[in-house]
Length: 353
Ligand SMILES: *Cc1c(COP(=O)(O)O)cnc(C)c1O
Ligand code: SF4
Image 1 (cartoon, rainbow, N blue to C red):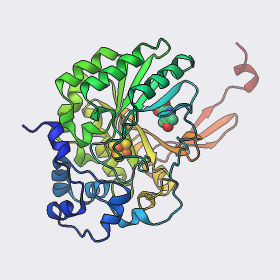
Image 2 (tube, helix red, strand yellow):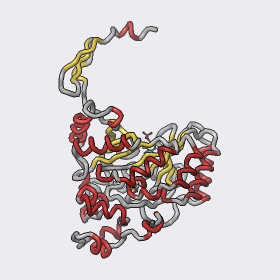
Image 3 (cartoon, protein in one colour):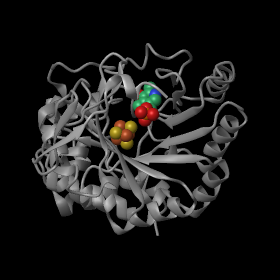
Image 4 (cartoon, protein in one colour):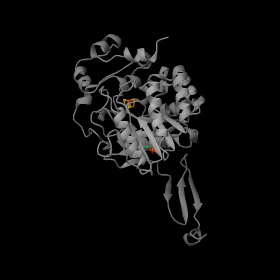
């Protein structure tokens, strides 16, 4: 069996290579890959060949990435919210730590597409020590989200070193890793990796699947190994035009994730990232999809639909409106569209103990 390192090394990265492997027009795409790199490994390539558009659009460059739109280079203002390089501190009790700039695939809609694929090591030992010093000096931080790029593309030894440094900080209670490899390179989940990760509990992993066709035997095996190592798994899906903006597709995805012991966590409205406008749906359309999911499928399978506010405002939960009327008798509409009522206790009484 080919190792994950070899699969990664043999990925398609040039337009000429792409034309050989996928019968698709590649005119004008070299200008796109010069700005935003491409990487498609043979595992995901086979899925593209088998399932077509919904996977093709996630991985294959599109010349619309170069059109000037409403998008911004750094829509979440991550660069201005960095007290030390590679660390984003936006919320009071948790930080984002960006440990590398590499992914198993370069998703065309990525929020950090400005930064990905450049090979310089983002978080070298010196910078990581600076980040740890900041965390030690900032005791209100209880949780570190290790992200990138994709942290699970680092070697087991490097990851172990980073996790060891984080576990030495007494205020850090929770470690959360964000990784798309269970979807884009599931062979990366090896038993050695799992035995490293399980030493750093409580450790959570949020992965990223966007379409039911991505739930393969290999992905199922990878998630089972992580779950068997005691790692609670979540999924952050991005709502993408022409890929998954459909209630039936998302219902199938979320049910399959739940069967793999992956809890759908967020469904994100596409960020205002430069070069990704062709993926954006209207917020109302996402809300309509949520209405078709809530109550109709297991509540465990329903993520929070959210928008990450431009400029670093944080995540805004977007929920369909079920309340028709506030007051002494609340009026609701349920998932079937029927009205329901609930008598509210009088305000004075409910505020006493
Ligand atoms: C999304 C995000 C988090 C985590 O938010 P949760 O709602 O806890 O998942 C933390 N920091 C930054 C900068 C983020 O963008
Ligand atoms: S794996 Fe995640 S970070 Fe990497 S390109 Fe895809 S969306 Fe962006």
